[in-house]
Image (cartoon, rainbow, N blue to C red; front, top):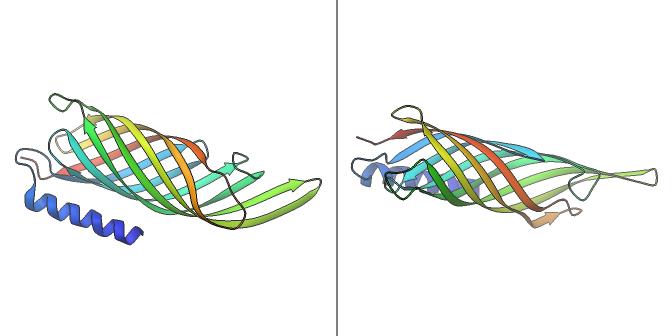
Length: 187
């Protein structure tokens, strides 16, 4: 799955170079860090600008989950790789720095869990495939002609689609993020 999304990202980048919008940035690469109450997600991202007010973005990231007792057990910890694709729409005039967007991520996680009940401790590992759709809001600080620092807030759901092992936590999710993006192709 992650290699298919990487291929799609490379396709978007080559498309942007060949058919970019004149007078605007056409594509960008950068880093991303998202934090949520039960984890941290560092990653690499690519963006394809569809004009001055919208873009399609992709990421490959690692999800470090430290759910503690937020899940279905006393302690849930683990992590795994994932990838996602999103769409952002900026302000309606002169590319205002505020934006709203949507994104969908897919995670392949291994979660080690422990449960203590009546002095009996059990533990195990659950492998899960997670679908994570979110709505995103943010602000894009253009700190240099080609560089941006972007703050985001995302709200959505973490849905365990495929599970091997005991059920582990899922549900609503709130993520706070910070992106850096270097833009290419502008004039």
